Image (cartoon, rainbow, N blue to C red):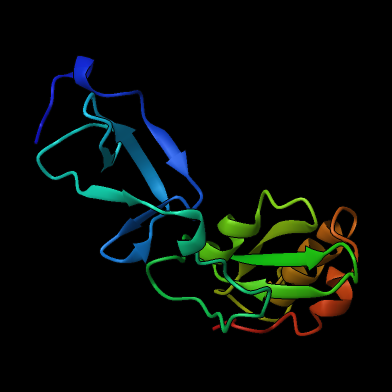
Amino acid sequence: MGLPRSKYSSPKHTPGGEFLLNKENYIGWYVVTYKNEYLTGKQAKDSSKKLIPVKEEQVIRPLFVEDKVEPNLTVVKNGIWTRYFLKKITNQKIIEVTKKKYLFFDKTSNIESAKLNWIIQGPVENRLINNYLYYGAEHNNRIATLRLNNTFDGISSYITDYKEFVN
């Protein structure tokens, strides 16, 4: 299936709702071949998989409902985990969602989206060491939430436990 560069389009990205891969909604990079086939990835390689275009009636739209989220080792980088939030503009309801749902709703006109870097490692409380104050995860998470509240109003009321998920 590997094709020369002249036989497929430049890479495009789908936020979901356009293609199915193994009967699942596909989010990611794809290319279009000269035969008008859709392949996963940024290049048409032997490892690329064929995508099935979704007909409008097949589109699986996620519901605007909260997801159960918690950090796992694959998404934590340097003790920081990215949390994803959505807010309906009509009623100002805020929910926390997975990255996949965040990406789906990110460009929706009646929904605002925000990301928050959440510290999950290190001491929870502030510590005074040799007359120097080291801020703990709880303090840093509170400050990050308050900063986000400037552009994503209501998040400081939604998040009240700044120690949540901290080891």
